[in-house]
Image 1: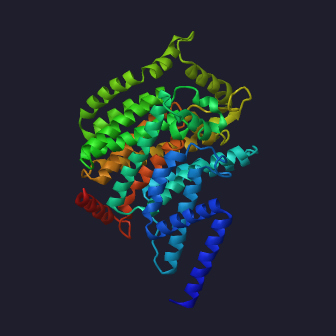
Image 2: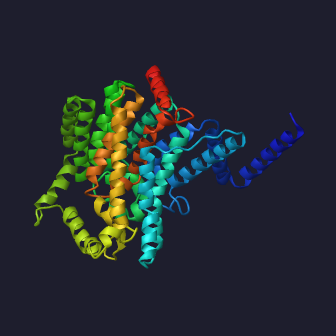
Image 3: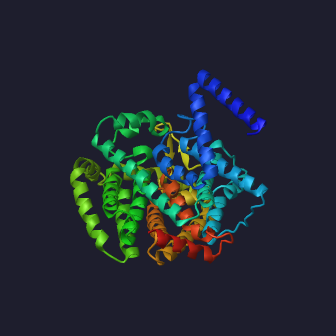
Amino acid sequence: MQPRLLAGLGITVVGGAFLVSTAPIPALLLFVVAGVVAAIVIRPAFATYLLITVTPLVVGIDRGSALPIVRPNEALSLLVGAALFGRAVWRLRTGNRRRLRLNQLEKSILIFTVAASVLPLMIMLARHRPVSGDDLIYALVLWKYVGAYVIVSASIKTAAEVRRCLFLSLGAAAVVAVVAILQVGGVGPVRSLLAAYYAPLGYVGALADARGSSTLALPAATGDLLIYNLGIAAALLSTRIGSRRLLLGAAVLFGVGVLATAEFSCALGLIIAVVIICVVNRSARFAYMAGAVAVLGGLGLQSVIAKRLSGFHSAQGLPTSWTGRLHNLQSYFWPELFHGWNSVLGVRLSARVPVASQARGYVWIESGYTWLLWGGGLPLFIAFFFLLYAGLRRGTRLAAGPPDVMGVVGRGLVVALGVMAVLMFFDPHLTYRGSADSLFVLMALSAVPGRASPTGSAVGGAELRSQSRGRT
């Protein structure tokens, strides 16, 4: 062994021992970070595995509460992204170069993201409107999901890796579902733990209602995540990939978990998902199972469902959440949105207004399509449908192919996009934390066939499908 290498190892060991003795916790974190970086450099797919597994479990922790400035999942994305970037730079030094080619879906994602960030800021400046820190934060939201897309695209190359991603997603979603069910059932210390670490904006009162917000700290986002993974589980069942018993159990768990969120929009999303699943699978068998699960889940969650339905007994005949949503739109957003050219050019990027009477200090836009017009006007509104078209086209093409892993990705993507498009009438579901990460991961996985060969040609997709059939 060379003297310089020995000297370097000796310095590292001595320095590590000194750091452990003086600051054990920072030393442990440093060793964990170093281990993660080393694992990603050796096996890039580990970056996506970490992202898929950890994000749903920590995404609900408020920004700045566990780490300065960022959420834990954002810090993880920065870490794995930096490791992949460093690896790519090193490979460039060795002459390994790849030409970047964007497919239609990636072009639509880029156009939508620019229309949701750069373009609105330029329009605000041109109209002499002040740009606040809140506007800048909202401008970065979509780029965070684009970053997740890039991480997946840069690290996942084979059918076996795609399959692991799907099952890791199911595993993380199962934990989220169990926590949501235990939360609404008041079992053990679940609510106290969520109140300590997962209270949205520090508002513990949000956990008082019997709604399964789970580790995403938002019931609607929890419902979306579970619905998307239900689509994956159903696709795996239809293609007979994986253990049938485990997949059936996961599907039941996700269905009950969606009901535990006690969100009307989630219940609607579940119905839409079942319909789409039956269409893409060309079988109504899944609908019968979903009906049985709905009955069993309804019996087990009687008190939660009864409490939500009691809102229809109010003086207005509608739940207060519905009347409050409409009141907020009519009072704080629609008058300004439909004044002058605002519906064409947008108002501003910040999708909330400060209201002192609100428990969390703000009123948010509770309509996804209103949010599109408010933040970016017609350009963003049109860009959204271009993204939706490109994603559905990609998903249906994969779903119509052989019953392999990529077919599963395609069917899951069609379910996720279909549900999201309908639920956008109620809230900006496209950007919900946790569920949006899952959606962008699915979109990135759908592009893996085109990246399986160095040229990104159709041959790569054929090779990937061949691997998929061989392994499943």
